[in-house]
Length: 383
Image 1 (tube, rainbow, N blue to C red):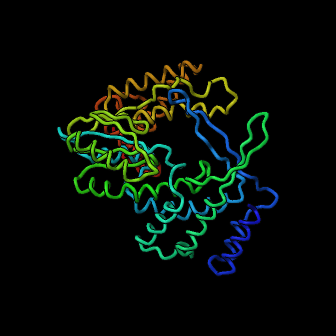
Image 2 (image 1 turned 135 degrees about the vertical axis):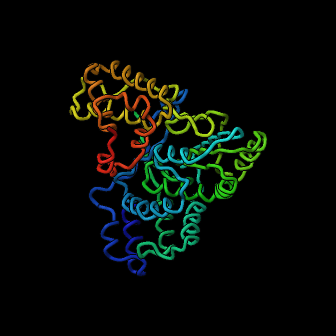
Image 3 (image 1 turned 60 degrees about the vertical axis):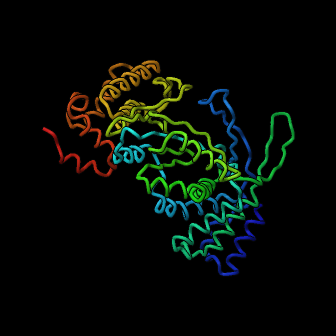
């Protein structure tokens, strides 16, 4: 793999498809490169604890090229895909701008085993079409054809080793999908799904409905009758022979770490926890630096305030946070101090009562702002 990859990159330079300086950054190390290995992580948040296959390729001869392609294509995908989410804060901002009606229903669907099921050639072709459609003849000096060759080199040389206890190692090449662990698999899947979902996205936008996606999880609103949306989702399921979706819907759905319920004219949101979630955080008596422990109650209170749109839900969530921290041996005074530190930073008061009473929505808005607005917020005091 080292020799093949080095030869591939040198050929790109020889054919003037890539500058020499890029070769120096992307060529694999002959002394540090290792063959990727397969291991499994249990999905302990799901019933039966199924396994997630991970190909560890941090020292793979292909890792530098994969990381480079992700840095090259990811900003373009984000720029031209406004419905793609990067975190739950962006999700909450979309919800805030949407007005619900008595006919609004919610649906979520999950694309099963997305990363290991995408067809390789079709996924690379989708990236080429995406770049061409948005007018990119070159990206950072590389033509679409060169980018295509780099993606195909990674996929066609996706070798890994599996060694089980007491057995000899076995060597494999992945022939479908991308390696879970490769830096470019995410953007490859994102753009393939972008092409697959395009028709549905356009329909949602024309009807003034939401369509939001975080990786392989989709959230949408609709005023269509239930039977009609079920038929449409079943048709989507047939559209991509390699992709299968599972879906659920109703007046309340769980998406990312948010439980969303329809209320008119705005959504009601609160923190969502999976059924298998246990009340564990970093134990107070662990050997970690104290600043990490200080930030755990602070960050939990911040998350609760961002997500909970109603005071009652926020109060309940703060109580759950306190119980979880107490179970992990955090002293009560320590908990109150650092949850209080969060409230003081947000409200610029020494009490949480302003946030937990009449000015709840005002202060919640502040938690949804970028971190860079802290200085501006200090000038906007409420006396």
